[in-house]
Image 1 (tube, rainbow, N blue to C red):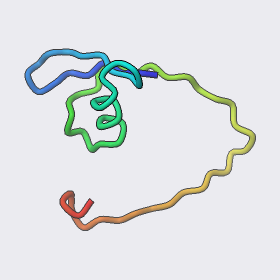
Image 2 (tube, rainbow, N blue to C red):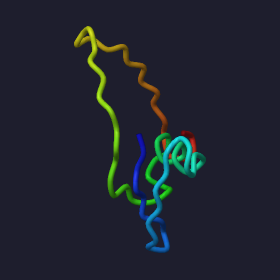
Image 3 (cartoon, rainbow, N blue to C red):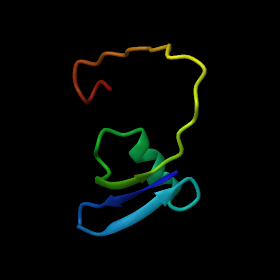
Image 4 (cartoon, one colour):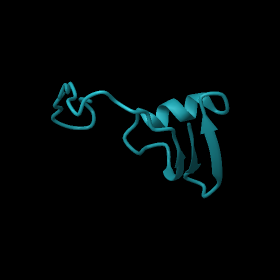
Length: 65
């Protein structure tokens, strides 16, 4: 699992859990502030049910989040 990211200066970088992990986790958990995701590589897993458990956290604005 990894992704190609275009940074603010126009350069492209690949990151995953082993290569540039800080940038990888910041992009996965971020709000689009690390750059533009160009490509994503991931593996799908079979699930046993179509039901999911969801927790919604609401924020007034970006600063609160």
